[in-house]
Structures are given as structure tokens and as C-alpha cells.
Amino acid sequence: MRPASLGLLALMGALIAAGCAGEPVRPGGVTDPGPEALYATVLPRSGGGQVRLADYRGRVLMLDFFATWSQPCLLSIPRYAVLDERFAKRGLAIVGVAMDELGDEVVVPFAAGLQIPYPLALADKPILAGDSAFGRLEAIPSLLIFDRQGRLCFVFIGLVPIEQVEQAIRRLL
Image 1 (cartoon, helix red, strand yellow):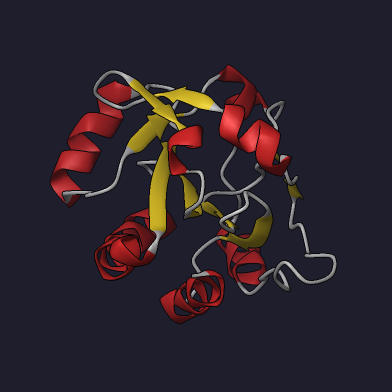
Image 2: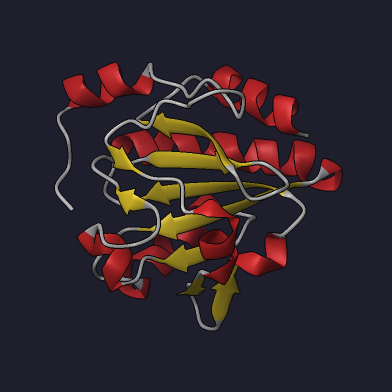
């Protein structure tokens, strides 16, 4: 995955999907996997084990595709930790998906340094190659928010004001 320019990230960061009503905007190559493919997704968990997205069925699911070397990701993740604390009891689940090809070698110390409270998965080869049910993630961070039925409702690309993310979550909870 190649990093996008800061200008592109700023431009794309202003994009937000219209929500579940109507046809949401799909920035870049992001696709809606549909509930069946979403909940069939199983990824390696950072530090060992697996992250099964089926475990989050019935919850609003926020997937944050990030990289440890990305400045926008470094700024976003602590804000997502606050959202996790604020909305987990109301039905929000956050899963970070590390797009680093070095995997746990870089993700484990990164997560420890930021004290990330939600589960982290490692992107598998299909996700890294753009051949997964999520389509081609052309920039990071890429944030996908699914409703309780597993439908993709919001796509945020780049550094986005946390108020926009929170507003999207509130609409779905």
C-alpha cells in the first residue's frame, strides 16, 4: 500500500458517506462487503489469536484501517479510544486493522505506546493487495462504519474531524 499525499488525504478527509439511506459515497476503491462477507471475515489478532468480525454482529462496527507510520493515524487513534470508552456500552465496537507489512514487529510496540483499548487485527494478504471484500483501500487511515445489520453506512478517508465520526456513530446507535 502506498501512502497518499497529504493534500489528497486532506481533500478525501472531507468526504463522508450519506449514511444508509440512499447510495453512500464510496471514496477510492472501498466496497460494501455486505453482512455475509463482513461477518465471515477472520483476521490474525495482533499479539496472537484471531479477530472474528462475526463476534460483533448486532453492534455498530467501526473498522479503522491504519498504519503505524502514518501521522493521521497517530492523531486519530487516541480519539477513537475516547469514542470506544464513550459508546461501547451503547453498542459500538471498534476494531483496528493494521496495514503494516511488518505486522506485530511494529504493531505491538505501537499499540502499547498508545494504550489502544480496542482489539487490533493484522491485515491479511488479500486486504493488503486490495482483493478483499472491502475493496481497494487507497489511503490510510480508512474508516468504515457498519450499522447493526452489517451494512456499510459511512466511509471516512484520511484525518477527519472527530465530531463527524461521532455524529455518524450517534446516528447508528
